[in-house]
Amino acid sequence: MENVLNLQDQLDEITANTRLLVQPERLEVSEQAVTDLFRSGAENRILSVGAKAPEFALPDSTGPMVQSSDLLALGPLVVDFFRGRWCPYCVTELEAWRGLYPQLRELGALMVAVSPQTVRQNDFTAGQHSLPFPLLADAGCEVAAKFGIVYQVPEFHQQYYRSILVNVPFVNGDESWRLPLPATYVIDRDGTVLFAEAHADFRVRPEPTEILDLLRSVVR
Image (cartoon, rainbow, N blue to C red; front, side, top):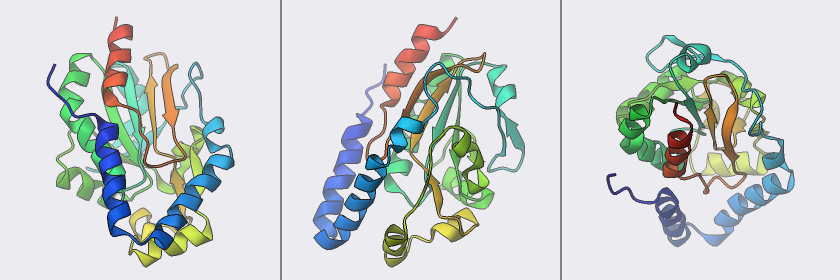
């Protein structure tokens, strides 16, 4: 197996650099938002292992509709929900999956990444980061809501995003300020959820190598 850097180490490096560059009072805004989201119990409401995953049909960044049922007819499916191209943690996670995608395909599995971004924004993301898997546009987080991972960005955090020129309404094409918890699911061919992980803290993500190990154990 090729030597792959630990994803969480890369994310922790982003956090460390951010703390060096951003004023403490501004960092406190994000810290408070994370704390509030965790205390809301958001992580406890996600669609869990053993549940039946909802079927979905969403437009790819290249235009065509992609149906989960079609993908599951071919093999197990990894579904990665990410917030947007403006999130360095999300981009780093997607790039980690880019490096491991050949191994995932060798196991007979497929992958899609889902965000509330517009199709155009997903197309920018796929091109800029050379992503080999489909990026699907989930307008208004409707599919993410079925997985139990949607939250409303509070007003004080909206103001923070605006102050750092992260224009979520423009990127998403609506004024809802709804985002998904960063989440990763593995769905078996019969629609059963084999793996489910989502975090109120956007700086924490599951290791892709852990998911590959799971797929190795279930490939038949």
